Length: 252
Ligand code: ATP
Image (tube, rainbow, N blue to C red):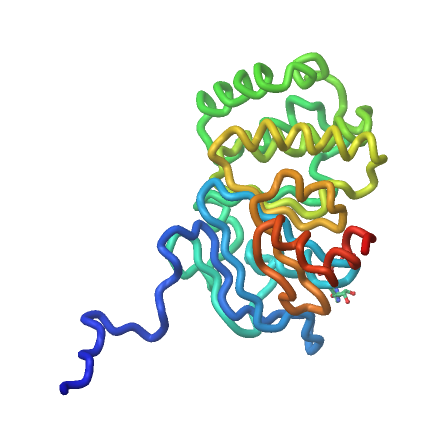
C-alpha cells in the first residue's frame, strides 16, 4: 500500500490554531542571562477569558511582557490572529487590537476624562469622543468623576478608570497584570464586577493573578509554576486537581 501523501501545503511548523486571537508557542524568555520562562504554550480565543494563576515570582508578568513585545523572546513565537508578531514592536501589536492594563493602570495627576482619552490615542477625535460617551453611559460613576484627578479616587475606582481607559481603545483583547494589586477584598470584588460588564462584550481577557477570585470570570485557567506551565484547562478541571486545589484554594 502506498504511503499517505504529504500535506498539500507543507510548512515549517504547524500553523497556529485558527480560532486563536493570541497564541504563544514554545516561549522561553528572561532577563539578561537569567531564564524565567520555559517552553510555554498559551492561547486565547476571540472573546475568551483566561486567567494565568501563579505564585509571586512564578513568571506571570514576564509572560504578559512577552505577549506584548515588551521583552524579547529567547525562544518560541507569538501569534496574533494567525500572524507571527514575534518581531513586532509593542505599539504595532496594540494597533492590532491588544490593550494592556498595568498594575497601576492610570496617571494619578490627570483627570478621569484625560486618562480615558489617552486610552483612545490611536483613534480619531470623533471616535474618541463617541467612545467617551459610551464609557460614561456604561460607567456612570466615571461621568460623575470626569473632572477629578484619577489619584483622588479610591483604589477600586482607579482600577475602574484603568479598565475603562483600555476599553476606550476598542481592543479585541485586554491583557491585565494583577488587577487586584494593592486593593482591599471589597475593592477586588468591585473590580470583578466591572470585569463582568466587560464580559458581556466580545472583548477577550487575559488576566495574570494570584487571587483566585478572578477565576469566577474565567473560562480557562493556566497555572504557571517556576516559569513552566503546570496546568491548562477549564476552571472546573482546575478545581478537580487535588494538588492544585490544595495550593490555590487552601482546601483538601
Ligand atoms: P508577581 O506576582 O510578584 O509579579 P510574577 O509571577 O508576575 O510575580 P515575574 O514578575 O514575571 O513573576 O517574575 C519572574 C522572575 O523574574 C522573578 O524571579 C523576578 O525576580 C524576575 N524578574 C522580574 N522582572 C525582572 C527584571 N526587570 N529584571 C530582572 N529580573 C526580573
